[in-house]
Image (cartoon, rainbow, N blue to C red; front, side):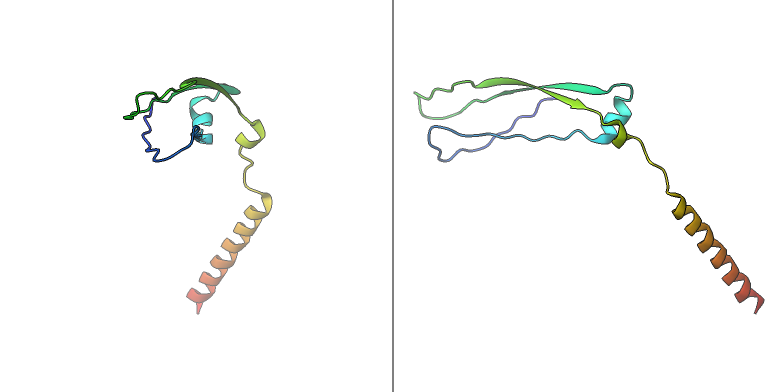
Length: 106
């Protein structure tokens, strides 16, 4: 999809740097591209200036940038719950059950 950015450049001298950042979420990679190990994105950008100045010249007003994104298999695989968390949860459950039995017995 295309996005249009409009930004006023009130004063600059001969050069300006425009930076755009984007994110590709892990969920997107894992849900939509499950069988793929890499994705190549092609970013196209062009700059146009609306100004009253008639002798304004833009050099390299359009560009195309390929971006490669690689899936890290170790980061994508869920590690599961550690064993000590399970043991701690079972012990806490038994303690709560014993406490309830004791309170209801009294």
